[in-house]
Image 1 (spheres, one colour):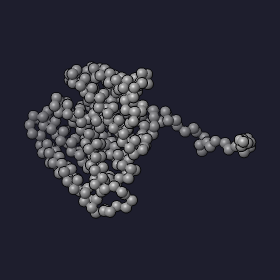
Image 2 (cartoon, one colour):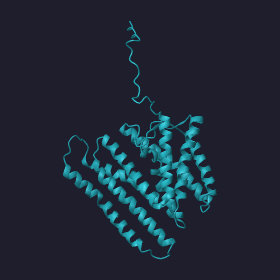
Image 3 (cartoon, rainbow, N blue to C red):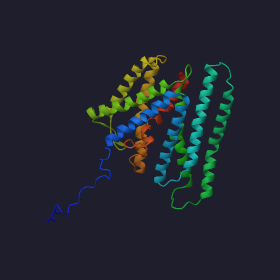
Length: 317
């Protein structure tokens, strides 16, 4: 027997916002914060080398913070403050060394005096990184035994180091991509990389929605399909060709290889982060961008793309 429905007099009205305004929809949040993020990103890249470096140093630090926070939610206790501090030092060292080497090679054709400072800074950071496992293990020794943690103390050491290898080192290699042998800091290369990544995402989404039938990795990301991956790959190659009208100093072969790298390794980076989030049972890595998740969600493709692009840059210029 069903219960009688409440009378109109006893039915509670839906709660309304105190100011009488409707809350912003998820779509509106995505558009608003997407535009703000794009303006900050493109503006910092276009303005100059220092604004680029400061912006992405903070981005990679926030990405690492999100990674450590996810691991903390899974029960680990990594040295987050130490790891983030080291990540900023590594990013700054790579930027300084790359910039100094460029000035030495392209402007003076001699040994640029500032390069000595850059090399010293790089060696100092390298020394800290080499000692980092020792520092992390000593940290665990002083805190042993930890309460409410069933993991081995070396798990905390491993998670702290993994964050640096997975997030900070690849993002630091963005400095290598940003500098060319002839032009020094070249904002066009970073903007071109963004266009390629966006085309990979847009092509995959459109082709997947239209033609997607065969799952790419159903246990990791059920929404991704082989048809979407092919669509993203093709659209990224087209953008690689189109960029020749802007990046006239790069050969068609180089642009297509770079576009293929983005189209192949970008989705792998996205799948890796999806696997990470599933392993700790969360939907988004953070909430810094309402409607978009965290910065690790936004730049996960970079973590697989940048090591390969940096290698291509070092080998072929």
